[in-house]
Length: 260
Image 1 (cartoon, rainbow, N blue to C red):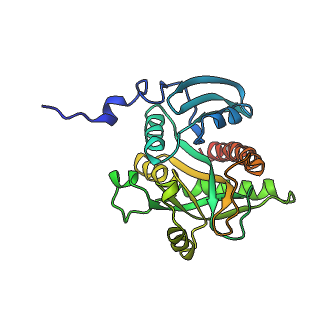
Image 2: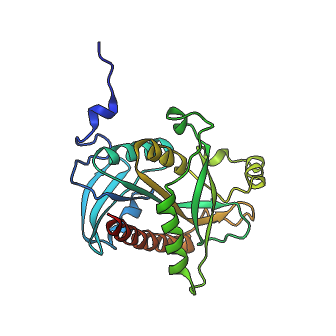
């Protein structure tokens, strides 16, 4: 009897959940949660082509300033994000960048500000399937450093702000009680989101670069939230973070090519 090795069985094949095959994507893939935000990214890409739209995973591939780039939505939470990451890596992804929405805990951060994660507290269950709970969840240093540098340069003089710090990746949106939020705030956690720690963990184990930038959807410390109407400042932040990531990719690719 031979027990199935899922990674070996799916490597280099058309992938079951994301419905993509080798050649469908670029080495750089942006990862929004919401499938509708894949369309937001696609409008910045030259010759963007819808490659697949299966389950919560909507993928476009095109080019930006000559670099082949893709966007694949992950859905909400670590389980579906982990599946998307694994399957994208199986068909050639080398850099995965989460572009998301996130609630801030730092009282300085306002709706519409950008936040770049330097590490993630693992308040979720998915990464525990991969590594011990004590194992840290951190993004790729070089790409994140370029992401920070690019964001600061692009926002300079605009009045828009970017913050850098440690995030918490949580499993239960409505399980975040006031007591739980206060505990994270005392640990000086910058923000709460739902996918980064699993993405970082898988990236580390699979030798691919990962990063995460989010637009602030609300501030839980200040109770500044918008749940019942359109969040226009957040929508503007999505556009800014997409532009920042695309420029970061171009700069990173240019530096990488010069070093080779």
